[in-house]
Length: 604
Image 1 (cartoon, rainbow, N blue to C red):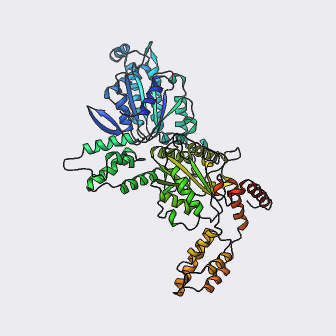
Image 2: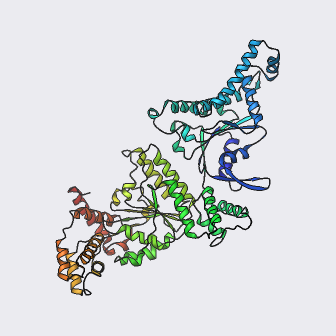
Image 3: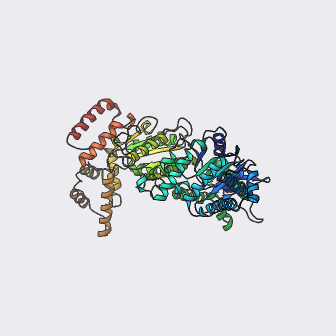
């Protein structure tokens, strides 16, 4: 197989005798290419492994959860059964043949019982994973046992076990069933047995994630993990070529561009999902357009991670649609967006966006996403109530990010998504934060993955996340509009509400009345004025608008918003983004003093 690093890694581990138990994780449910008789075919992982590892001195056994223990060749079953008889009876091959013919009726009956026991165990293993695992362990014992100084079985065993996460599921011992605990004990004894470790047999467990395997087994030093990555662009391109070459006469795959472009657009898809996409387009004889490909990628990634974990953001507005924030928009156009589009060491790993609640952070940076022709993934809820599921979600996220060519990770309310890493933090939260931090600073992701964290409580983000090399390279404050920007918001609020264009004096009077308004407050006021126009079925007079504004009582959150504003100012990493860049140092000391005063009053 071309470009198969996981098989190469597995071969090195086995040949170097580092371990006898391999755990294949990741893309274990996909299809893999194999050259057979000068032609390529795609097959599931188990069939691919058995085809690659079939050798004269190897016997391959496969166990599936709801099926029997399978032998790749019928003669292999006979070899193992004969070895079983020699092991159980203590007779070598020649003696065993003589005993079968000449021994007493009692001895022959004993041999027939052993023979029947082997067949009964194979039959009992169907649908009974506990029996199956124990029988496979016994076969390994038989394989390395000596009978009259000779090995009971001359060939070495390869045992492939599917659905490892269902056989020995993760969970507290007290919460496992008796059968689960029994299988856990069998695997623990089997894989940690020094005799097995020193043999030439080996076992391959298949599971989507190591975190789904019970940790009493998964953490054994005798088990080594071999991750199977999602197909890269070369593998996807080879599959597309293979698929197009097998289309019936008269059928064709109509693409909007080249095969290379299609391979690029399908980043994130498995071969299975790519096959579904191509088969649908070929059957319907419709052109395969970029929109349909992107939709398939989004659907597949959501199916892998869960709709409650991620969503894809497709903002329709852009920076030109924003009211006010002129200096910030200039910075975003000239500084942030160009660095998001870079792919080398000059690219940013991420940025944090902070400022008081209602300041417009999410809307502004949705506009940034709208300016970019990039996939935007919104992380919604990484934590899971189920034991070990958070770790699995993170592993799936990592595989998705490794497969995508370019992506923005959009995290709103980041302070609630990520916690700390201190000893007082819950283990799950600590692992979650630690793994996210590792992904943020991973050099292999730089230039491909950009983390955009938004929070009104920047001080609650872990200091490890806020350090340079992660989002600490760029912390952007989004502050309430002032001066000319506030007047721009007033004009936007009054647009279509007054019978005539407001004069400068009217705008200034409204600006004074709404001096403590945030972007969200202006949006709320605008919606109320629009509703009033619709109810009265006419435009409003200046006095009516003044009365509506005067009737508004701001919510009692001013001190909290001031605290969040000060935290944004103190944590900002660009002087040019501060209200007055010339007082950055002296202003920072004053802001810190005011923060301490608010904290003494209990504001957080």
